[in-house]
Length: 262
Ligand SMILES: CCCCCCCCCCCCCCCC(=O)OC[C@@H](O)COP(=O)(O)O
Image (cartoon, rainbow, N blue to C red; front, side, top):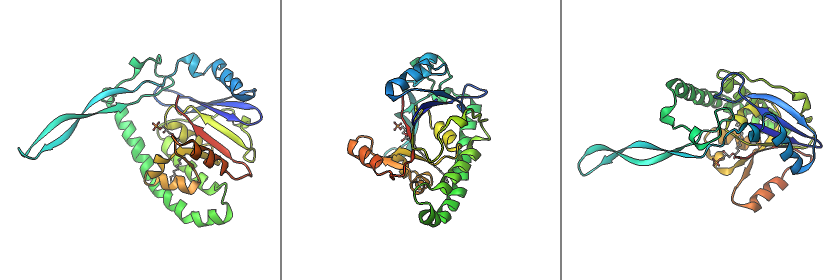
């Protein structure tokens, strides 16, 4: 997973798994001097951890049969039809060769991985429910005292991310000194291999203004937190919305985080 921080010079932040091949964590920041998009492309291609060289994956979606209970009212008996198939997307930098065959259906995941995944979601939900209360209480003060950066909310988000991730992954952060200071306008761009980049970037504690598709704001608790943090909503199919939201940023300058899928 890579994050590019674009400010006067351009740096790449790499998010990689420390010990296993199943999850990614924040591990390496490689400074790369360059200007403009072409320089960025070169940086990605030439970097030893780049997706191009390692062939890390954006694995194509694989359809997996999934049974859903269905009620046949006439016969008053329960029957099971293959009604839908579910898309299971596996994206990992480290998992294999980058071919579609490397994707595997949910049903083939080991029990341990499933339990681990369920625990992850349980922890993140429980922690969010507690922390959202703090955010709600602090929100009026944040609007009065720190309307733009909202550092308090970002601190809460950092707590949420750290408490969620730390039982499951060990984060290693290298090269923090290469990041621009908080008062330097910068754009961070991630290739968004999975949602783990959001957690790992939140643990940095920087007041990124994330840009997010509008649908995510509808999630309970997380969506409310995003609104309070000032996450920028984006209607993806509407280029006017994209322009309007970015130009609405406060002229003092912000650090923006943009995630995109590769
Ligand atoms: C108290 C709890 C604190 C919670 C803090 C939550 C802060 C969350 C910051 C969220 C930033 C969300 C950025 C989302 C970026 C985005 O929009 O990604 C789109 C992808 O998904 C791809 O979607 P799709 O193509 O539809 O699969």
